[in-house]
Length: 220
Length: 212
Image 1 (cartoon, chains in turn blue, orange):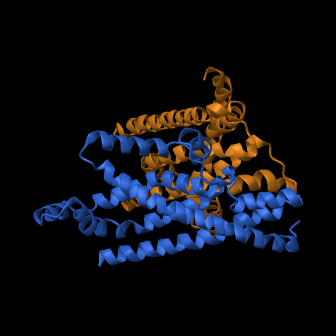
Image 2: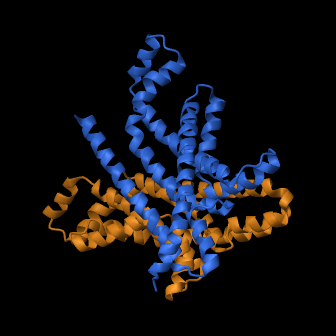
Image 3: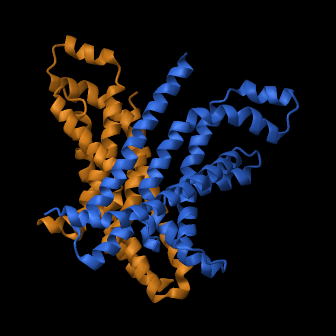
């Protein structure tokens, strides 16, 4: 039932696609980190309409499927804005924007955990807004949330197969392509699952350890 | 836009069907796995850990492909709907089990001790003292999980189950000029469905919190 020769013969192709999977994950994560931070800051804006708009965006994007958002971006952007992006670019933007809404909540928790005195001290020192954020608030808000951000990195890694829908040849689509030639289904799809597990499980263990270590440091 | 409605409604019916069925199947799986993680038998715990880590560690879409495309190869052929429901329920059951486990562990130790002191059997202790208290803690995270589950039903599009996303794709191929409107409408429909789920959980939470 399981043919090792066949499995080994398709492995190089899958590993090549794994590179695309990882690149899309890292790219999406970068977008999510930056856009998420901007959302978190904008939500705190004192100008209410802006804050509401950001909140509505977060709520809407979080409650709708990534697959549909990616379809929207991939098929509608060329018609609305006249820009036609590659599947890879749309994949990174779609994945990144979707998870930026989750990430903004993570940032929010980190920012809210910074004590009020820090804001007051920055005001008392006559710091500008930018300087307050960059040299007082964020350096204290971000380290405690790194493990949670790491968890989202893993979640995003596991969501990349969705991007196969817009013809991005990541691992799952690579397996599908192999299957369409060889008609042997079992090994490629199983290998994709195994590869995902081999990466995401150790990664999640690492993050758990990081979390424990950071909690201990804070306790000390 | 009117000509889009019948197909989208049909798709919404399938989406709701998949969501409700997989949600109903997910709950017992999550509860059983969550309780099994706390079992005093190491073998039971080990099996559960493997289940949870495998389903959380590989992605849902891969699991769906595996159940629908790879499993027939070894003689198990599932209909589309069954494969979709099973994949989603098993995947979210794994995530849900962690909610069940952590909520049970969050019940104060004194409650366990009190139940022991009252000479309750382990079953009575769990069903009358611990679980009801843990249940209230589970609601908010299960609300979020249910939204994620609803969103994930769009993945059955990949196995050509004619849900909302699939129907929208059919419509897009017929009315290419309306592409942006079709996807935007689809997003709004999913948003509305998610809103109903959120509302349901809010009502349930309020109901259960009333006596506290």
